[in-house]
Length: 345
Image 1 (cartoon, rainbow, N blue to C red):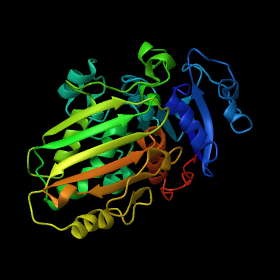
Image 2 (tube, one colour):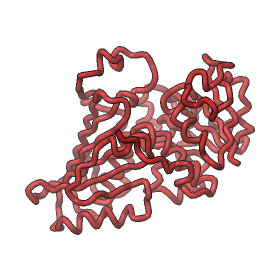
Image 3 (cartoon, rainbow, N blue to C red):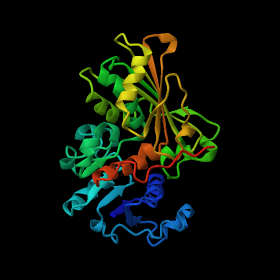
Image 4 (cartoon, helix red, strand yellow):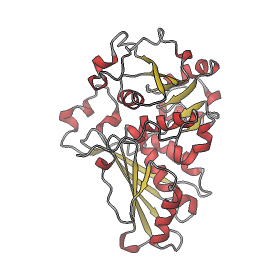
């Protein structure tokens, strides 16, 4: 059994980890930390876990995380980098769901996240945890940088086109929407029911933290300079993410060949569903599951390819993807504990 610790178990990604790991056949939940909720039974805060998780939250200084095999950080940016070195020395693997290790360039990280990086020696070692593109590297990793939710949709939606060299990499557009849970479980006016319900708005238009992360990863797959315009939006739903990608074709290619690029790339990736050409995926088709669905369009058979990508921002966009990485790190089939079918209606 894999002994698992979770740092920051009271947020949405934390409770999603608990939901998934509580029924994982190879996991023993060992410690769940929360300074504020020290001593509170987890099931008292999250009644959905009654009978599944019998642990209580413990203050970080009371939890001996060095006895774990792997520790997930479902915490604000900056926490994992402070604690990871000590855990790694003790032989504990680390999976960070925040952004501490996503950006290799320390100066770029500090520019966008406005905090100093206290473990720069781990930036090069950390493996970016997008399983479908980094499967082999993840298997041998000690530190995983779990991808952002938006970047997951953008990278999986654009990778086959960049790999084939059939689009203009300098003029990519991502028009993305996320449910309110993407903002986390903190009290903020903008995510109050009366503020977000019956409303639709863009944010981060001048620049979003997921842009440098996505651009740096996409740059690995092309010799062209990546140019990405990314505009996120907040939609009045709890879970779900819908990203519409636009790219200009630079080579003659028919629709069947375009479709084949995606089907061939993801034929062995059971959490990426390449739908028939012209399909219209819906966010509810992934709700509560680790599935990401992709559909291709080509308006008027012109030179623009449109890629529609949907996922649950808390599962494939966060905690499910982290569990997928853990499975590979410990030699398990990556689908272990992640076979939940999407909730409908």
